[in-house]
Length: 194
Image 1 (cartoon, rainbow, N blue to C red):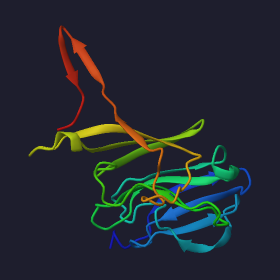
Image 2 (spheres, helix red, strand yellow; image 1 turned 90 degrees about the horizontal axis):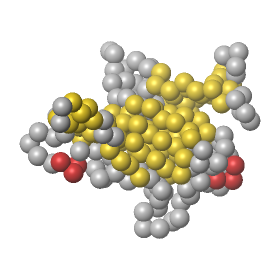
Image 3 (cartoon, rainbow, N blue to C red; image 1 turned 180 degrees about the horizontal axis):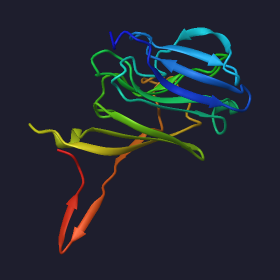
Image 4 (cartoon, rainbow, N blue to C red; image 1 turned 180 degrees about the vertical axis):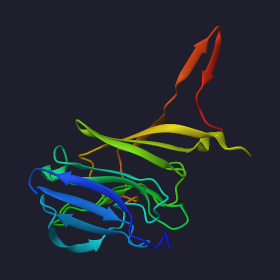
């Protein structure tokens, strides 16, 4: 019964042009989007929420709204979520613009070099970039006991679909490990999970 309930996974305020509250919920594994006025009256009916939040209430996700620095100066959502039932399709996603002029962008499907079973933690809009913080299996350390690394992923907000071989895929996405070290008496310890 828990799985089939409607769990709110994203709740954001869009202040500028829209001045509304955006909600994405699991809707029994079929995410739905809702928009509300600031007084919490419903602004419009619900619509499908593919990519905006995780289907499963147990999967972490992160989302933000960015008003500036995007293609054609539109406002856009940016999300990090797991969008399938088996937790094998994580995604960092920017949906298409409302008028369809800007196509959606996402991380490639089922490519563990881009995202490997991530647990999304947070996302931040900083200047011309969006940063995603997450933990994931370290593909560079493949062994019987996989390591979990803390990561930061960065993408440029003005990235657009170039209709190349990898259509609708981020061209500016980069990720790096976050290493925290403690050095005591010539002993260095990396805080990475095993």
